[in-house]
Image (cartoon, rainbow, N blue to C red; front, side, top):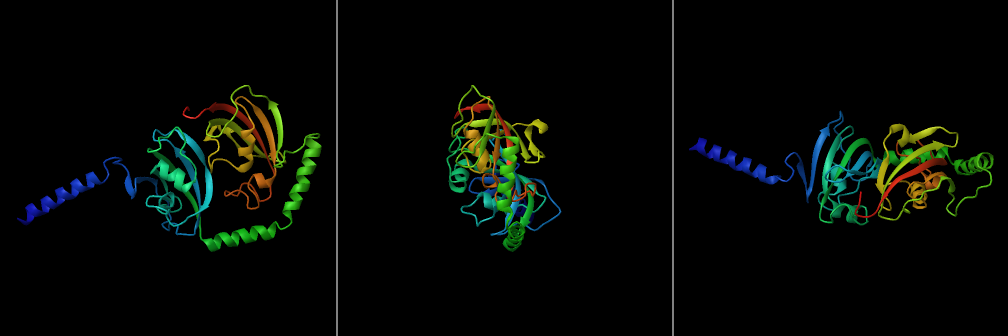
Length: 293
């Protein structure tokens, strides 16, 4: 009798396990339509807590793995605003871990990013976030790091302005900045569609310091960058303004002060120092209107 009861219990548990997540059987449930699958487990076990700052390699994709954003972001982990939020996802990852998360697109875009769902994703559909945890800092560690940077560069802001003026006068005389402070130099006009909010852009760009040293290049990687224009967390403020002035096929050069780039903190990766002016050479390869990729 006991053997029969045990077998019955195991069958019931197996049935419950199958019913628990039949939609994405290779994923584990986080809650509220969010699922995750670990790909890599790092050597560390400590995971972020509320208030910690995390540095994460991110890729946002459609359910068929079409990437519409890819980059590294540093952000503070909040208490989950709802079950299965992106904060709840990050709380599952220790340094060195990588995973794929499936989330409800409407929840992520409207409640987390405070924006509308891209037109190429159904409003009631899902999306994927592929995340690799690079670093976790406590609030105290973050504040100490920030204070040390600000102390070191107390007078650096004025110095940047001098360097930028000297560069423009020697390398690009005769051009004037736009009201935002960005310098716009057209290399080859574009004859295609003007960029508009909601368009999916495919671009090549090369980022350099004023001394000519490269810090990033999609051309060298042979991997154009694709993103939805006008959506938060996609590109830095200066690059957002720059591509918004362009047309499909255009090739232009932009020189921008740090307040349009990575500001007084520099990039989260440490590659770009605080108060650093940047040069971006951008080519718009393709502009896809809403609903088309």
